[in-house]
Image (cartoon, rainbow, N blue to C red; front, top):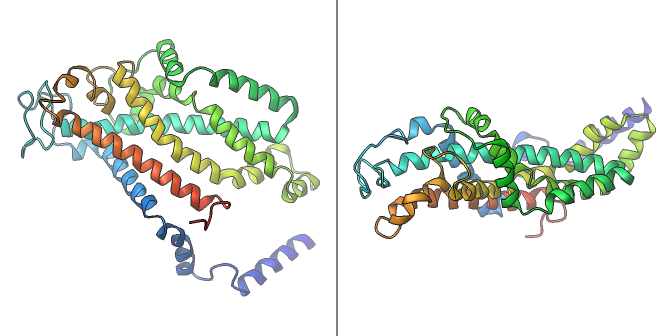
Length: 318
């Protein structure tokens, strides 16, 4: 009780001395201040929001069904087809919009799985240390020793290729689960090393020792005390990996081992017969190529900005 009363007194003194924002306006101004110095981060956030809107509202935004032959083959951009048509007469703009669903669904599910598993292993490995740390590190090093693209191809071959599917983003993510699992395995080790390094710094700090002293259980210490303090690293890692996962999904689909033929995908639309018309009909590649480039660039900009804002070692360095 004495400890709680002293903590309450410290909080009241900090509020009275102005150490914390007193109003909502001051809190918003303090949160916005780091972003004003990082316009690239704001631009990345806008691109991410735009890509998310395309993925969620594809059925409303796209003027044509991506699988139908809406026009004649290789029509140049016009009022009916903003990005023209491909060699099959399909609307390139509609396929680009629907391609955001595949890329965002696979990227979100694969990144979420990889970051969640890597964070869990990193906290357990860093907190317990000893043989638990050594065993988990060696097992993850074996997994990381295989080249990422080869690992994805092997796992997709073992689990089976995803089938063509429609629907919302969450349903599509479930239909593409084999591709998501294959991609996420390549990022677990990297996430684990980042979180483990942060946990090694946190586990010997006074607040952890105080939690141990008052009898807090090990799961409670890891989830209620250590995890919130390393969560900024989790957020930064998530946004950084997201763009890389989109590139990997596009690369696997480009090689023909990703989504099934006929599914609108940025990587798939840049491969196959469309490659034969990149010179004579460049609009075939402009839609998916620009969308892929901007989306990856947006997540990279956002990840760099979040790293600068959330990492106390970099805060205020620019």
